[in-house]
Length: 397
Image (cartoon, rainbow, N blue to C red; front, side, top):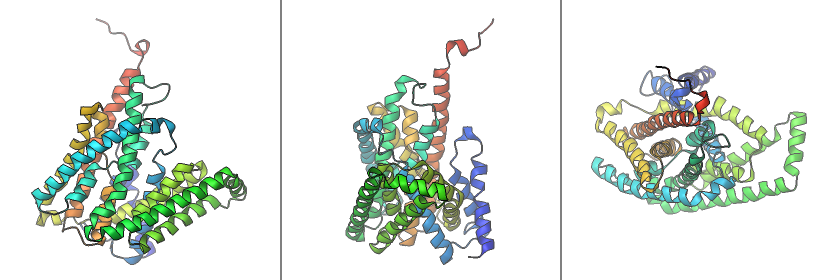
């Protein structure tokens, strides 16, 4: 990989913000980055060589940081969300049961033998996508509509539970022959994450973290950021040594930091690294390795992608049976982290059939499109409900 290629990758990453520029469309930035990678990668011009070792290593770093940031989005410390864990867990379990039936049914219909993978994908929700949407919309707080309070808290809890459970489950189902080894590796990573949590909590309670922050801020040392990245990559090293995906390492490290409370300064610094460099690089690389030309050879896989996307939406909409509004169910269906991990790990292990990786991403994009429509509907309805009678223009005959 040369500097000219790196410059091209960073420039292509700008397609993400450009495509997401219209706020009312609610399109994720990664969509444009994926499309840019597809156009310049294996499907399109072939300029980007996804197998380049340096490109792969940088993409792995990006994947780890992306999953770390996703983990920090899980509201572990929010007491209001914890109060809604029972209803959120019930909905997540219902979705999981239906996703299991749907996943194995789709795998049998398309004869891929990947029913467990499809079940995990369909049951997943993306905290990194959904929770920022919830925070951005006027859904909660003193100015929000009161009846929406409990559904929003339950939605937040549901997404957090589903995302965590599916991230843990994916390494176990994606390679059943080595599930035992993956389970041991997952336990090792989880143990390290728990130890990290207690270490961070000790530093917080003793005031050491605040003293480090003060020195770092006064002297512009960025000590907290350096420490966060060192811990993250150390946990990734544990994951690779125990034959577990760095997806789990990144997410577990993010959960540990979220449980203690991420300093605002570090959050901004990680945002800059993730959204400004490593994140776009990873998604452009991911798009470059997706070969949509396989759809021409295996057109049935287009139907597979649509079936996975539609199935993921339907199993989440089924929570209407236990009181969740349709729009919230559709929003909870949004998935990206788990499908991306399935594509990344599945292709590295050579488990997926030709074109299946593109089908998995197509399914994820379908759920994102439905979630975007649901978000627009929620925003419009909330705006209409909160508009006072005195603000409405009188209607004249």
